[in-house]
Image (cartoon, rainbow, N blue to C red; front, side, top):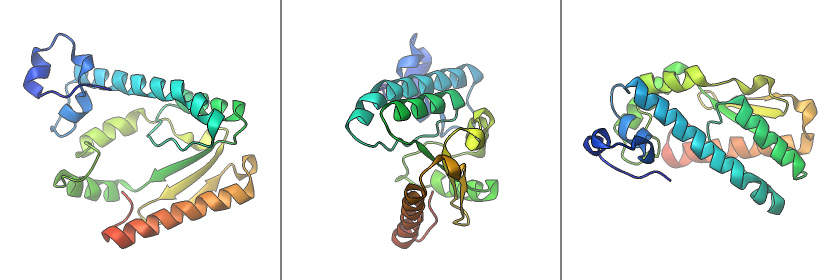
Length: 187
């Protein structure tokens, strides 16, 4: 969706929004505020595209959307689209303590296989600062703690118990498979 370039090319550009800013800045120790604002704008563009495609996908089948979905407004739009298509929306939130996250980020910084470019606590904390907690969203939420393996269900009365059990089993199975194949907890 966004073009690749070097930091030098970006700094010379009159159109920085067209470049993959997160890929460029996340590995750096800090992100200048003006570029952080553009990164958030790009995130909004990506979520707008997700929202454009979601109703079409939901008309064909159930859909799993994977992302941080940090804004309540975006999540509510997705919940509405699911309900309109006759689906019951569920949210799976993966959490971990900041101690666990810090250890994972340090390990990630030395990895070439990780898809995320978030490698410092500073970047994580900026994202966390803008995150709107989904605990009060009007859907069933399964909160999975990847540090200790706990799964807590919120708003169970809004979901179907059989579906909740299946989702919980999938989350636990996925985590166990990840531990078995990598020797580490779910990222």
